[in-house]
Length: 117
Image 1 (spheres, rainbow, N blue to C red):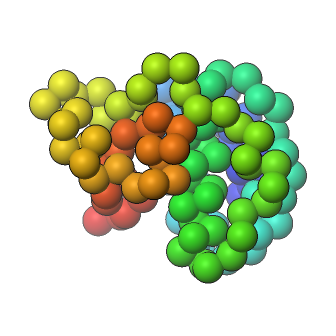
Image 2 (cartoon, one colour):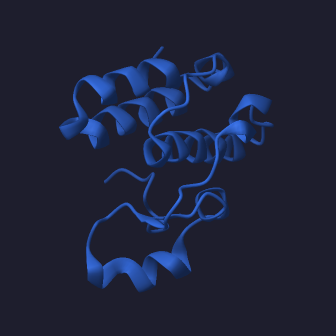
């Protein structure tokens, strides 16, 4: 089982592969459906990635209809709006489609952000 804390460490070690590490966590969490994967807090540091990880974990809890661990609420929003796609032409649609758990932390993604093909 891949934990959120391990995912953050993997992203810190290989930031160029952050999307792969994040989606590996998402896939593993959906497979195991085990809240222990998000029970241990990670050290708060880089605000955009911390906010993205926290929002992702909360969105996955919503899928399971489970309350997220309280420690996730301590992760602050991004200082500036963070558009994960990085494409200027997707900003407007990201603002409209971004799920609530992400918008709360000023993260803007497409509605299918956590989907796999």
